[in-house]
Length: 304
Image (cartoon, rainbow, N blue to C red; front, side, top):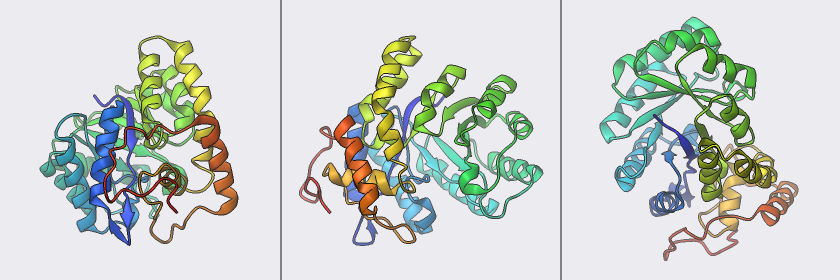
């Protein structure tokens, strides 16, 4: 249902507020570049530091600007089941095509708690849902048996697998009818080789055409061509996680003159040593930001 290179959108800020004009320009850039779908308000979108009103506004803006041209999958997860239900209902009411649900973080529920959490959300809407497994951030991993139980719900259609465990991706693909999207750019090809259908990508923020081409070529059976793109981009995949996401990718976008690199505390700007690593990768790989529609309020290239 949701396949290809789906970008985990950054949320641009300017002087502490969401930069709506820049966000709209990002949407247009991705559609022009061939990105297959958009995820606002995920981890890369700094959902943890958005107010409820901001979260809702970002989802509404992306849905409205996209206007049905590609799927919009709103990040609506929370460590409060009630809040996740409310955010997912809002995404549905706003016209989103689906929702991305991170496993509850910090409170570390049991597998039964995870099952009941996701089932409560799935029962509350008619949207297709992608479950998001990223134990490095949440402190808990969704186990294969839990995925198998959740797969019985008609609204649960896919998994964003970001545990870094290819064996878990294989168990999901082999033991359920759920589709799997890589949650780590550096594992895009390995996950697709197992039967995955694409990636929810951080790198697509800055190399949108190459990520779309990589996935398209692999799905067309043109494996050698896809592999060539993958290895060319690999240094950038690494550099974009030289510090915690989305600090490096926002800095890369700022260096390309696209948006400010402003992040919200407790995140902080990229440190000098890390920036050297990022700049080296950019010099080696290049960025694909020429499709970004400029405007009076767009930052100058290399903006600090």
